[in-house]
Image (tube, rainbow, N blue to C red; front, side, top):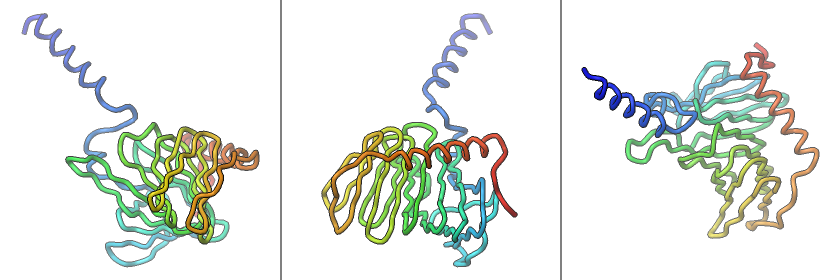
Length: 222
C-alpha cells in the first residue's frame, strides 16, 4: 500500500471522527438506551412496566421505557442517560419514563413525565434529538443544558438555568431563557419571572453533588 493511499485513508478516518456528535459513545450505546441509577439516598422505588412489580432502586440498576420511579421523604436519586444527561429527582417526586427508545430512522426518542415533585436535568450538550419533559398539561422541550421542572398540584414551573427551554400547552407557547422562570397554573401561562438567589443556591448544591458523583464520591446510603 503506497503512501498516497495511506494518506487518503487517514484523511477519511479523520473526517468520520469529526462528523461524530461530541459527547456520544459507540452506536451500540444509542441503540440500547436506558437510565442507570448513579446515586440513591433513602427510599427510592421503581415500578417495572415489564414485570408490573415495584422494587427498591439501587445504585447501578437500570430503568427503562415505561418504568416509574418514586422518591420518598428525605430521599433522592440521580439517573444517568449514558453520554447524554443526568436526571436528579428530589424528595417526594414521582416520574414516569414515557418514551425511551432508539429508532433507526429518527434516532433517540426521550420523554419523561413529571407526575409530582421536582426534577433537575443536566444535559451533556445541546440536544440534537427530542428531549422532552411532560408536567401536567405542559410539554417542555430542551434547547439548553440545565433545567429544573417543578410540579405541585396543577402548578408547573420551568426554571431555565442554562440555555433556552420551550414550554407549550394547548397551542400556547412560552420560552424560558437563561435565568427565567415560566409558570403555568389554572390552565394558562403566567407572567415570567427571574430565578431567585435561593434557586441559584440550589443549583450550586446540585453542581457540587454532580461533581462528587463524577469523581466517585456520591453521598449514597445502603
